[in-house]
Length: 382
Picture (tube, rainbow, N blue to C red):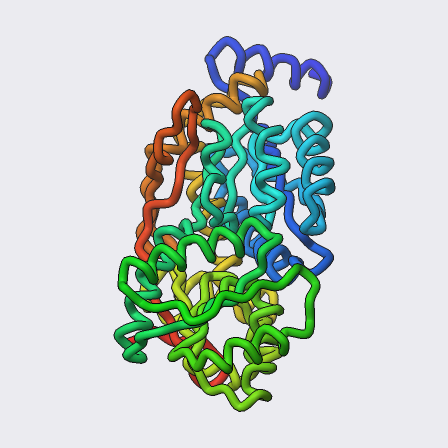
């Protein structure tokens, strides 16, 4: 019997028996792999690669191999839009992970919702992300959930009575963080002596810091990304200021210590992930990451790694039909019920707060961990 006849016979048998041939599961990854946000985006990409390699080595999902389609959205809104269109319309991926920054998510996520394609954020923590539609998911814990916990821990740790605030006022992530910090400080009746802002790309913060120094706060609250935060810390110390810093998960990057080194000591930061979490899943993730990439992982790699496993858990409940529109909808329907315990600990989804006249997506339900910087790294706050 010729090869063609054998293949045809096998295909007829599979169709008759109700079985299906294994297929590739195309997964879109839109991350900032160049530009200032690459310090997050590259780690995120690595987290996805690590998880996919592990899953495929174990047979994939229901016998189907996962294929990553990775695009660089450069941390820019217009590029995120272009990349989403390519992944959804041209590459015909089943789901899109990304983008890296909340600014880009606000620009690109509506495209995914309009095409009824799940967009899954692993690093978007700004308020309002999941209000953009029912196909928006994230396992990145909202700043609104993390920063109040961090603020209370800092007040207790340093006996804080008054603070100054510094934040980037032209970025959705840092602006959202400021709003949450402001509310959290008010709830704890902590006085704000001075509020200063900066713009993306600024490198000289001494004018703002001189005003903050004059106000003599007990601590400095900084809603910033890692590189700006590190430079602010260094310039603060050069002015003879010794106040501790309180930050969000934008601080949780090796870049902070590459630049600021031990000047960042006594910085408090809240996050769902810690390298010191002794759970077996986290130990395996860290060891595997170091082996594959010869570097230490960060929170953003861990969240991407877990996100792929969350998707894989959902896909166990999905029978792929070959109809892309139907399969994308099936993914959306399967994800909310997933409960998972991975590198970042126990995880589940919760429906975003209801919005009048809007269908909303799903946020992360996960506990925050407070870390303190000591000797050039973050350790668990005792």
